[in-house]
Amino acid sequence: GDSVTQMEGPVTLSEEAFLTINCTYTATGYPSLFWYVQYPGEGLQLLLKATKADDKGSNKGFEATYRKETTSFHLEKGSVQVSDSAVYFCALRDPWSGANSKLTFGKGITLSVRP
Amino acid sequence: DGGITQSPKYLFRKEGQNVTLSCEQNLNHDAMYWYRQDPGQGLRLIYYSQIVNDFQKGDIAEGYSVSREKKESFPLTVTSAQKNPTAFYLCASSIIQGYSEAFFGQGTRLTVV
Image 1 (cartoon, rainbow over the protein chains, first blue to last red):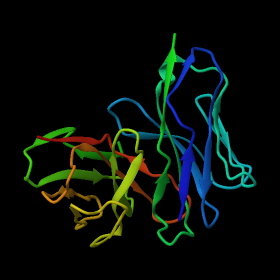
Image 2 (cartoon, rainbow over the protein chains, first blue to last red):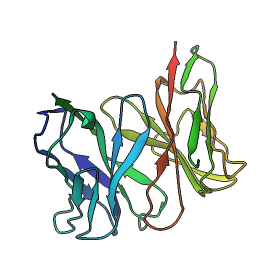
Image 3 (spheres, chains in turn purple, green):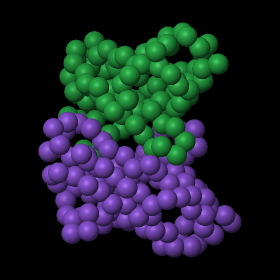
Image 4 (cartoon, chains in turn red, blue):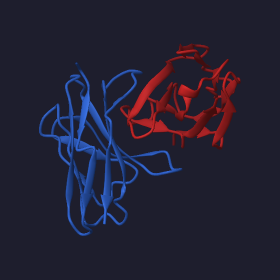
């Protein structure tokens, strides 16, 4: 079945540090890939997405590139801010899996940015 | 404004009682979902629905029930059969086809005492 694997957390960085959060996936077809962010006590918000190989999603300084050859979708940001402290989820949606409306999530990783 | 509304935000219930969580959307989405979130376990799918009057079990459906009588509404009932109901519950919706993302509500934190 479909699955998403995220690097283990939590991650603690100093402000202005470079961020990389790894995400790899397993899917039977050609999924769309997503990064969601969750602030404390809130629901999930879409951060960025990519729908086909080599697409780069970007938003608020975050970027991720859909790499089909390595089945990866790593999240990066060049300079993190304290306000980026949140939980980040990688997810996929695979219309070829037989349950085409379903999102599959990784376990999430908590990012803390200190001033 | 279009979006998904979950209510209430916090809910307390005594053990052995059934409780219903509300989820309403005005995005005109056909698909709706319920997820459960526990610390360190990510999001796990409880039920999902692609059309009115039809729904499918997700990965952890035992002890839960849903209905989809209207396109806009997808309430979740946590029954007394659910062994560990205390959790954060998230409702989401999306278009049914293609590669679209899902949109989430603000969540309901259920505490059973």
